[in-house]
Length: 308
Ligand code: GLU
Image (cartoon, rainbow, N blue to C red; front, top):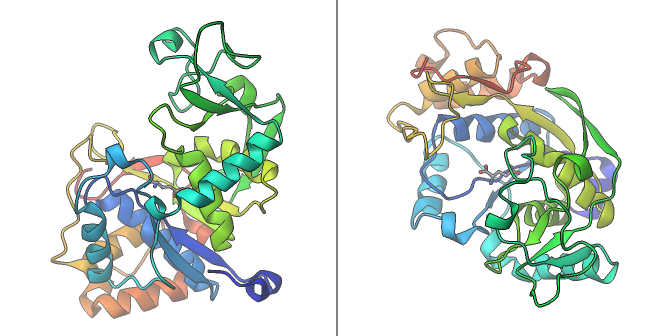
């Protein structure tokens, strides 16, 4: 956790926040190494959080597998691992705070009822505002949404440049408490990052379209806005993001030094060709000494080695 003193000194605190929906693949290793080297190269802390708030998507044993793989690759995190599944009270408090301030309304709409709505940039349905001024007669709330007012939200991404979005126009009022009773990722991530004192969020560009929503929540909850850097996402030959759905291969733990050197190359750091031959410790030392966010390619997606 980041202490008050750290915050005053402007100390860098980064994090890696995998969802335990499958084993670590090359794409997750990119976010892990990029976030870690960014924090460490600035003398900062690096924290680990298992994002198991979306329990239906969690695969039994995946979280433990991710931790083992990270250790095998030589990652060292500060403090205890934070598990979102143990943080319901913190999400409930933030939700109650927003509700008391009038920012939340109950929504009865089913997915089917919203099937005709326009698509937002990230592929979710734009909420048409049906229940925003009260539930239709005879209907009960299934989910709870944040009332989003029109206006631009913007941030300067350290890799992708300036990003701006009118969340009301693009996404609309978004869900904070889901119909299945689970808190939404958008709320959990904001509450957790604030409590841990995260000063920079370095993660895959697949999450860039969530960032303006998260900044909106940070403003409403009076939390500081961290710096953001969205790294290129690794894809396969078909241009699909590596994920469980695209059957991404679990990382091969047999050659951790080589794979980390591949991640450094993927992130534009240009490591010496024979770096991996010097072993894992040498790859880490080189990474810490030479990390430069300025060298990371300004793209949202690029082929992973071995898939290209
Ligand atoms: N849990 C998310 C994922 O694995 C990452 C969330 C974040 O870094 O903000 O895709």
